[in-house]
Length: 407
Image (cartoon, rainbow, N blue to C red; front, side, top):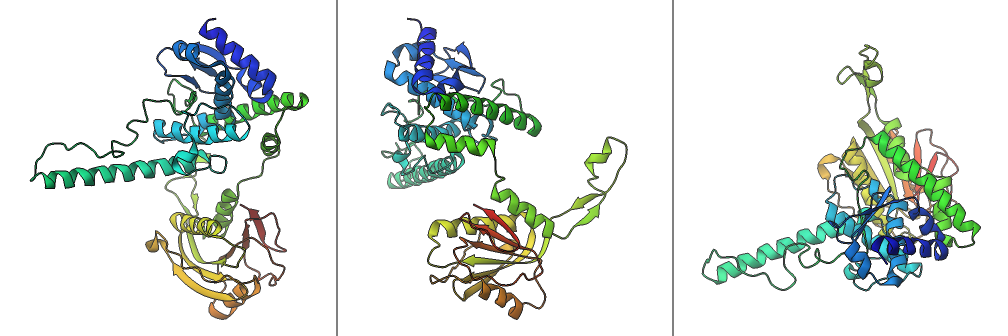
């Protein structure tokens, strides 16, 4: 049986046993590619090394097809941006392999798994895994440099290269030769053309359409796992990410003014040079951080990241008010304070009124906006203060006034 026939058989087996992944893969053009190590896809084609396919154990073939299909359904071929390609592949493989394992697929023990680094690929994104891997490689490189420096000093200043200690080779050394999964994900298009934002959006919409079609077929056969069904529901009925809503809210509260450079790009094509709106300054912002007993370290880390993001994007003066059933402390920040070091206090019950009362008592004038970072696990709300209030919630609860977005 030729390598091409083995790939076709693996796709057929996936279509019968795992119809969602099989249906996704059936749309790909097969490309024999002896220059690659294993398999690859860019969302349109499936490339394969004939020698690798011929040596691939039959029971892993179905997993290899699902592995490549999951890369595409997660849109890894459209999300890399400027990230380092090899590490991006490793990060995506951690996520894909861990998720396939949770779905009961048979994985080769040599394929990269999150457990190797203490990660759970079912709970993190490829971007988070990538950041972890890049940080780890930077730490390994620093240790290697330090070890070489110590070895040179111990050898009386010998300028020769001392051999690295075990586990302290170049970042990725000893790992890059072995594939981190049964196949790789490549950017679309593989020719290396740089897509515009509009083209990326179009490619994502096309992928979503194919994913929904594959899910519909799998559901008709009664073989669509519950987690995949939830994923498809999000694609069909998407909810705007709360980070985007937060950005829009802050921009609406920003002080806008007009400038002629750069001009408003919407009217340049018509020969009209009109002023553009500038929205990069905020006056005073109060961020009420819920530090009650129901808020854990993970939530506080997310809160810290969002406060940093606001300061990075806007020239603002931010007052952070820590509260549980009372105001437990405050901190003041501006851009010069980045990176932030939050000092949360609290741990008791929850009451949203004290933070608003602090604003009334301690501030000479109302803030431009107020943001609550909370799980909304409380029914004690203040009255609507008359200025913009955003509730960023870690649960599905809704606040009685202002805007509510969900993490």
